[in-house]
Image: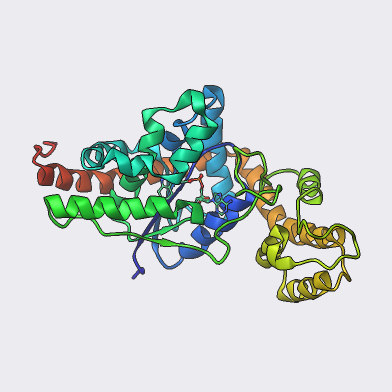
Length: 330
Ligand code: TYM
């Protein structure tokens, strides 16, 4: 018996960073043991901003490689690529017809992305959260493990389920987000959320020397100007990352030694680098092996899509009948 169904997704942007890993993937791996988990590489979401056609397919494969290397086990959960299950976009169309445009224009991510990509504000970008709602609801998932930045989209998903149920009869659950204690990782600039588009990220598969260089130059407590000034771990982004990757004794010691200026930022960063690499090295090794055997990843994704099409087709038939369309005659 599982505790229920989980759905979550990640965009194939070509890089999976510490924010994705700590905010989402680490808990995807844990939840896999107790829940019926469906994890998706959301390629249709990735084309809502400008992208390079040549790289997209590689990035989808790289997302599959990275997720499996992180411990997502296709034998224990369902891993697949969104565009291989057409019911996602079909259900999104039905949801489009019950979603007020105002709800979408108010979304923080839409406002941020349309400011970043002024030349490329397209319908897909506005509609992004509706497709996300369809991703989750086509499997009637009850829980969605995500980082803090996605909470608004999960709220919209609940509103969409409610609206559909009120109009067409009880069909969808109202899914809950599952957040980790560190559901927001800041970038190396210390000011904005870590993200690929802001180029303030540390990629989990980047070579150790690149990771060290990014950590070495990361912004910490900006009030600490000199080595002998006491620091404040509460406002230091790297201390947040320590809390994820360092042992309790290290965390307690750094907390004390930073406040008393016993330890400087560089020393603290070296400890973090060692602990982080101890965690990432096996993931990097396993990714390197998987890249040499792409057929393993392709087989897992094919099987995942097959299972999902079966589940999604049933729900889509139920939806068609409820909204007054003809069912599919097979
Ligand atoms: P994406 O690819 O942007 O992010 C994937 C996951 O990583 C989390 N995340 C972070 N967590 C903490 N700190 C950060 N700096 C950070 N940056 C990213 C995100 O919250 C997310 O959980 N819209 C989704 C993709 C999606 C989806 C879905 C998710 C499409 N359909 C259905 C759940 C359910 C997204 O932002 O992906």
